[in-house]
Length: 248
Image (cartoon, rainbow, N blue to C red; front, side):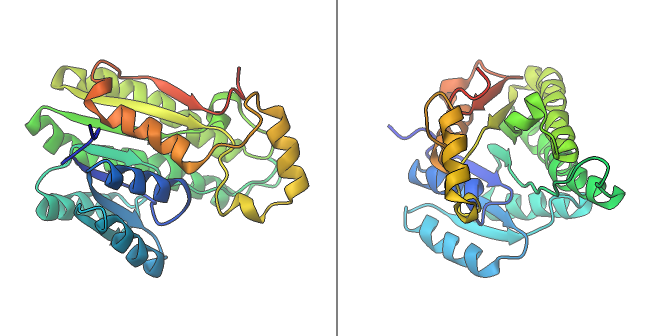
C-alpha cells in the first residue's frame, strides 16, 4: 500500500540534498510533486525527469521562498497546475556560520529570512486552500541545532528554534480545521555537501552518534512520508528528531 498516493505536495528547496531525497520518496509513494529551486535550473530539470518516471505529475518552480509575494504567487501557480495542495514541506534553508562576534547583521538577517520567514510565507499562502478542503499536513524542517544550539551557529539556531514555536502555534490555530502542523529536527545528515568535508572529521562525528552513522536524506524523507500520510492523522504540534539518538 502506498502511503501518499494521489496527494499533491509542495517541497521548497528540493533540487539537492535532503529536499531532493524527500521529493524522490514522495514520487515513489505515488504523490504528485511540486518543488521549488533557487538557481540550479539544470538540476531541477533533471529532477522533474527522475520524478516523472514514477508515473506521477512533477514540476519545478524557480521561486524565492524568502519573498512573501513570490510565495503567494507560487501557491497560486501550483493550485492552477495541480488543482489542490494536500501537503506543504518547508525545507528551504541556508547557513552562514560564524562566531557571534563576527556575524554581520546582513548574515543574521539573511538566515532568518530564508530559514524562518520562508516558513511563514508558504504556510500563510497554503492555509486558505487547505481550510477550504478541510484537510492538510504542514511539515517544517528544523534541526537538532534548533533544539540544543551550537557554537558558531547563533543565527541558524535562532531560525531553527523559531520554526518550533511557529509549528506549535499553527497546530493550535488550525487543528479545528483538520490541518496538522509538525516539525522534523534532523541531526547529522550525509549529503553531497558533507561529502566535501574531511573524512576523518566526519568519522569522528559518526562515533558520537548512538547509531554510529550519519543519517541519509531517505531517513528524513521517511519521517516526512509518515507525517504527510493518513497514518499520522492524530499527530500535530510535534517535533520528531531524526538524529540517530544524538540528543538522547
